[in-house]
Length: 241
Image 1 (spheres, rainbow, N blue to C red):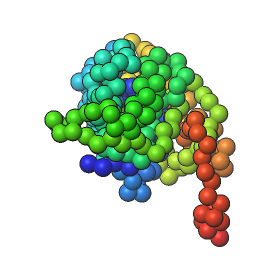
Image 2 (cartoon, rainbow, N blue to C red):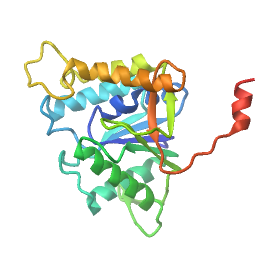
Image 3 (spheres, rainbow, N blue to C red):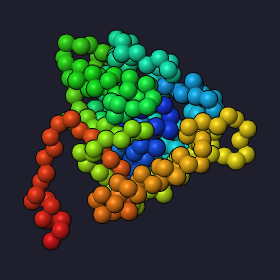
Image 4 (cartoon, rainbow, N blue to C red):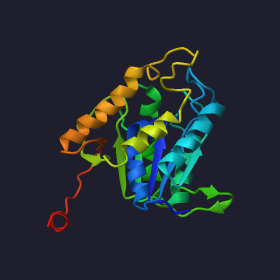
Protein backbone atom coordinates (compact mmCIF):
# COMPACT_ATOMS: atom_id res chain seq x y z
CA UNK A 1 0.00 0.00 0.00
CA UNK A 2 1.33 3.43 -0.95
CA UNK A 3 0.71 6.16 1.61
CA UNK A 4 0.94 9.92 1.24
CA UNK A 5 1.76 10.55 4.89
CA UNK A 6 3.26 8.39 7.63
CA UNK A 7 3.04 9.42 11.29
CA UNK A 8 5.48 7.80 13.73
CA UNK A 9 4.77 7.95 17.48
CA UNK A 10 6.33 6.47 20.58
CA UNK A 11 3.04 5.30 22.11
CA UNK A 12 -0.58 4.71 21.17
CA UNK A 13 -2.46 8.04 21.71
CA UNK A 14 0.57 10.27 20.95
CA UNK A 15 -0.55 10.93 17.38
CA UNK A 16 -4.13 11.68 18.40
CA UNK A 17 -3.11 14.16 21.07
CA UNK A 18 -0.56 15.92 18.90
CA UNK A 19 -2.01 15.92 15.40
CA UNK A 20 -5.30 14.02 15.40
CA UNK A 21 -7.06 16.95 13.77
CA UNK A 22 -4.51 17.05 10.96
CA UNK A 23 -4.78 13.30 10.37
CA UNK A 24 -8.57 13.59 10.16
CA UNK A 25 -8.36 16.63 7.86
CA UNK A 26 -5.96 14.94 5.45
CA UNK A 27 -8.00 11.73 5.44
CA UNK A 28 -11.16 13.71 4.79
CA UNK A 29 -9.52 15.11 1.67
CA UNK A 30 -8.57 11.67 0.31
CA UNK A 31 -4.94 11.86 1.42
CA UNK A 32 -3.80 8.46 2.68
CA UNK A 33 -2.38 8.70 6.20
CA UNK A 34 -0.80 5.81 8.08
CA UNK A 35 -0.06 5.64 11.81
CA UNK A 36 2.84 3.65 13.22
CA UNK A 37 3.35 3.31 16.97
CA UNK A 38 6.82 2.17 17.93
CA UNK A 39 5.75 0.63 21.26
CA UNK A 40 2.58 -0.76 22.81
CA UNK A 41 2.87 1.63 25.76
CA UNK A 42 3.16 -1.33 28.11
CA UNK A 43 5.11 0.67 30.70
CA UNK A 44 2.21 3.08 31.18
CA UNK A 45 0.65 3.26 34.63
CA UNK A 46 -2.90 2.78 33.40
CA UNK A 47 -4.30 0.10 31.12
CA UNK A 48 -2.43 -2.78 29.51
CA UNK A 49 -0.73 -3.36 26.17
CA UNK A 50 -3.84 -5.25 25.05
CA UNK A 51 -6.35 -2.58 26.03
CA UNK A 52 -4.21 0.15 24.50
CA UNK A 53 -4.03 -1.77 21.23
CA UNK A 54 -7.81 -1.98 21.04
CA UNK A 55 -8.12 1.69 21.88
CA UNK A 56 -5.51 2.60 19.26
CA UNK A 57 -7.32 0.84 16.45
CA UNK A 58 -10.66 2.36 17.47
CA UNK A 59 -9.01 5.79 17.43
CA UNK A 60 -7.50 5.17 13.98
CA UNK A 61 -10.95 4.24 12.67
CA UNK A 62 -12.35 7.43 14.18
CA UNK A 63 -9.72 9.51 12.37
CA UNK A 64 -10.28 7.46 9.18
CA UNK A 65 -6.57 6.67 8.93
CA UNK A 66 -5.62 4.29 6.10
CA UNK A 67 -3.73 1.93 8.42
CA UNK A 68 -2.16 1.55 11.85
CA UNK A 69 0.72 -0.70 12.85
CA UNK A 70 2.92 -1.30 15.87
CA UNK A 71 6.65 -2.00 15.60
CA UNK A 72 6.67 -3.67 19.05
CA UNK A 73 9.84 -1.98 20.27
CA UNK A 74 10.07 -2.27 24.09
CA UNK A 75 8.44 0.69 25.81
CA UNK A 76 10.85 2.78 27.84
CA UNK A 77 13.82 1.36 25.94
CA UNK A 78 13.66 2.84 22.44
CA UNK A 79 17.30 2.45 21.54
CA UNK A 80 18.95 3.96 18.51
CA UNK A 81 20.35 0.66 17.30
CA UNK A 82 20.48 -1.23 14.00
CA UNK A 83 17.48 -3.44 14.75
CA UNK A 84 15.15 -0.54 15.53
CA UNK A 85 16.56 1.59 12.73
CA UNK A 86 15.89 -1.14 10.19
CA UNK A 87 12.31 -1.61 11.46
CA UNK A 88 11.59 2.02 10.66
CA UNK A 89 13.45 1.98 7.34
CA UNK A 90 11.49 -1.09 6.24
CA UNK A 91 8.23 0.75 7.05
CA UNK A 92 9.28 3.85 5.14
CA UNK A 93 10.34 1.84 2.09
CA UNK A 94 7.19 -0.25 2.28
CA UNK A 95 4.74 2.67 2.30
CA UNK A 96 6.88 5.28 0.47
CA UNK A 97 5.23 8.39 1.97
CA UNK A 98 5.89 11.87 0.65
CA UNK A 99 5.78 13.28 4.18
CA UNK A 100 6.80 11.79 7.52
CA UNK A 101 5.77 13.20 10.91
CA UNK A 102 7.69 12.51 14.12
CA UNK A 103 7.75 13.81 17.71
CA UNK A 104 9.61 17.06 18.30
CA UNK A 105 13.16 16.41 19.47
CA UNK A 106 12.83 18.06 22.89
CA UNK A 107 10.12 16.87 25.24
CA UNK A 108 9.19 15.91 28.79
CA UNK A 109 9.10 12.19 27.94
CA UNK A 110 12.47 10.61 27.02
CA UNK A 111 10.73 8.11 24.71
CA UNK A 112 9.49 10.97 22.55
CA UNK A 113 13.01 12.33 22.20
CA UNK A 114 14.40 8.88 21.39
CA UNK A 115 11.78 8.32 18.69
CA UNK A 116 12.46 11.73 17.18
CA UNK A 117 16.16 10.95 16.73
CA UNK A 118 15.42 7.44 15.45
CA UNK A 119 12.95 8.65 12.83
CA UNK A 120 15.25 11.41 11.57
CA UNK A 121 18.06 8.94 11.03
CA UNK A 122 15.76 6.39 9.38
CA UNK A 123 14.30 8.98 6.98
CA UNK A 124 17.80 9.79 5.76
CA UNK A 125 19.20 6.25 5.66
CA UNK A 126 16.10 4.96 3.89
CA UNK A 127 17.34 6.84 0.83
CA UNK A 128 20.72 5.09 0.73
CA UNK A 129 20.82 2.34 -1.89
CA UNK A 130 23.67 0.48 -0.16
CA UNK A 131 21.50 -0.19 2.89
CA UNK A 132 19.70 -3.42 2.04
CA UNK A 133 16.33 -4.28 3.57
CA UNK A 134 13.68 -6.91 2.89
CA UNK A 135 9.92 -6.96 3.34
CA UNK A 136 8.75 -10.58 3.66
CA UNK A 137 12.01 -11.70 2.06
CA UNK A 138 11.48 -9.40 -0.95
CA UNK A 139 14.28 -6.84 -1.51
CA UNK A 140 13.14 -3.25 -1.06
CA UNK A 141 14.07 -0.26 -3.19
CA UNK A 142 15.70 2.69 -1.47
CA UNK A 143 13.38 5.64 -0.90
CA UNK A 144 13.54 8.94 0.96
CA UNK A 145 10.44 11.02 1.87
CA UNK A 146 10.39 14.60 0.65
CA UNK A 147 9.77 16.19 4.05
CA UNK A 148 10.10 15.43 7.76
CA UNK A 149 7.86 17.48 10.06
CA UNK A 150 7.74 17.40 13.86
CA UNK A 151 4.58 17.54 15.99
CA UNK A 152 4.23 19.10 19.42
CA UNK A 153 3.74 17.02 22.56
CA UNK A 154 4.33 18.46 26.05
CA UNK A 155 7.07 21.02 25.45
CA UNK A 156 6.20 23.89 23.14
CA UNK A 157 8.21 25.35 20.29
CA UNK A 158 7.89 28.21 17.82
CA UNK A 159 5.95 26.62 14.93
CA UNK A 160 7.11 26.67 11.34
CA UNK A 161 3.47 26.34 10.32
CA UNK A 162 0.04 25.77 11.89
CA UNK A 163 -2.71 23.62 10.39
CA UNK A 164 -6.31 24.82 10.65
CA UNK A 165 -8.20 21.90 12.22
CA UNK A 166 -11.43 23.77 12.99
CA UNK A 167 -13.55 21.35 10.96
CA UNK A 168 -11.96 18.21 12.45
CA UNK A 169 -11.24 19.22 16.04
CA UNK A 170 -14.23 17.39 17.52
CA UNK A 171 -13.23 14.30 15.52
CA UNK A 172 -9.79 14.57 17.14
CA UNK A 173 -11.38 14.71 20.60
CA UNK A 174 -13.54 11.65 19.83
CA UNK A 175 -10.38 9.77 18.86
CA UNK A 176 -8.71 10.78 22.11
CA UNK A 177 -11.79 9.62 24.02
CA UNK A 178 -11.26 6.13 22.56
CA UNK A 179 -8.43 5.75 25.08
CA UNK A 180 -10.73 5.12 28.01
CA UNK A 181 -7.95 3.71 30.19
CA UNK A 182 -5.60 6.64 29.70
CA UNK A 183 -7.56 9.83 30.20
CA UNK A 184 -9.92 11.18 32.82
CA UNK A 185 -12.60 8.68 33.76
CA UNK A 186 -14.46 9.25 37.07
CA UNK A 187 -15.27 5.52 37.25
CA UNK A 188 -11.65 4.40 36.97
CA UNK A 189 -9.93 2.98 40.05
CA UNK A 190 -6.46 3.13 38.51
CA UNK A 191 -3.82 5.57 39.80
CA UNK A 192 -3.99 9.15 38.60
CA UNK A 193 -1.32 10.20 36.10
CA UNK A 194 -0.15 13.37 34.38
CA UNK A 195 -2.57 12.78 31.49
CA UNK A 196 -5.51 11.27 33.40
CA UNK A 197 -6.35 14.48 35.24
CA UNK A 198 -9.32 16.41 33.76
CA UNK A 199 -7.05 19.45 33.42
CA UNK A 200 -5.01 17.64 30.76
CA UNK A 201 -7.89 17.33 28.29
CA UNK A 202 -8.74 20.97 29.00
CA UNK A 203 -5.13 21.80 28.10
CA UNK A 204 -5.40 19.95 24.77
CA UNK A 205 -8.48 22.00 23.88
CA UNK A 206 -6.93 25.27 25.07
CA UNK A 207 -3.73 24.63 23.11
CA UNK A 208 -5.71 24.03 19.94
CA UNK A 209 -7.59 27.27 20.56
CA UNK A 210 -4.34 29.14 21.19
CA UNK A 211 -2.68 28.02 17.97
CA UNK A 212 -5.91 28.48 16.05
CA UNK A 213 -6.01 32.08 17.24
CA UNK A 214 -2.49 32.59 15.85
CA UNK A 215 -3.82 31.98 12.33
CA UNK A 216 -7.23 33.58 12.90
CA UNK A 217 -9.00 30.22 13.07
CA UNK A 218 -10.90 28.44 15.84
CA UNK A 219 -8.49 25.51 16.30
CA UNK A 220 -4.97 24.78 15.10
CA UNK A 221 -2.14 22.25 15.42
CA UNK A 222 1.51 23.45 15.35
CA UNK A 223 4.39 21.83 13.49
CA UNK A 224 8.12 22.40 13.11
CA UNK A 225 10.44 21.85 10.15
CA UNK A 226 14.21 22.12 10.28
CA UNK A 227 14.30 23.18 6.63
CA UNK A 228 12.97 26.27 4.88
CA UNK A 229 9.54 25.88 3.31
CA UNK A 230 8.41 27.40 0.03
CA UNK A 231 5.35 29.66 -0.04
CA UNK A 232 3.59 29.62 -3.42
CA UNK A 233 2.17 33.15 -3.66
CA UNK A 234 0.40 32.38 -6.93
CA UNK A 235 -1.64 29.64 -5.24
CA UNK A 236 -2.39 32.04 -2.40
CA UNK A 237 -3.89 34.64 -4.74
CA UNK A 238 -5.80 32.04 -6.77
CA UNK A 239 -7.33 30.75 -3.53
CA UNK A 240 -8.26 34.19 -2.25
CA UNK A 241 -9.67 35.73 -5.44
